[in-house]
Amino acid sequence: MSRQDAMKQFLQGVADDQAGYRALLDLLAQQFQAAIHHQQERLGEIAAAIGTLVDTLEARRARRVELATRLTGPQPAIERVFALLRPESRTRVESDWKALEQMVLAAKAAGKRNGELLAEQYTIMQRVLHGEDQTYEPA
Image (cartoon, rainbow, N blue to C red; front, side):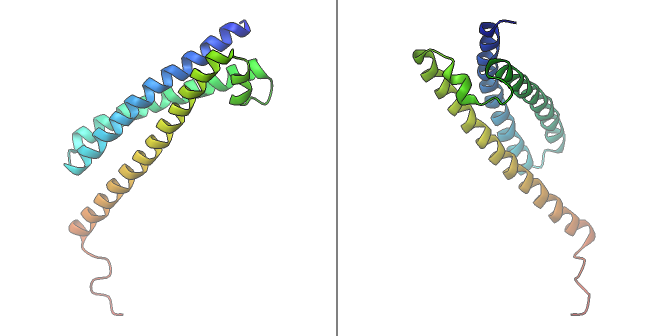
């Protein structure tokens, strides 16, 4: 594979991940709504879709690391990949990369929020079904 092909694949992976993270953010918003409305079946469907998408995103990330290594050597860094681009392309790609980083952070925050909501709902349901563990224990 030529360096030019490796760079094309690298840049396409960034663009594909932007679309992937937009889809992930949408799924996380749907998951939050389904959790609020206690839509268990919908939660299962969304969880499966999230799992599939996350696997795809992880595979693309791993491929991007391989391509960056091919382009810059054994210790790849995104800045070194950017340095290989012409100035007009570099500005656009750096902007796309920053946007992708922001989407990753937003997805992590949404995933954390959803996880906390689901854990709290589970805890509440356990209390309702089984009562408080320490309700009648002496102090």
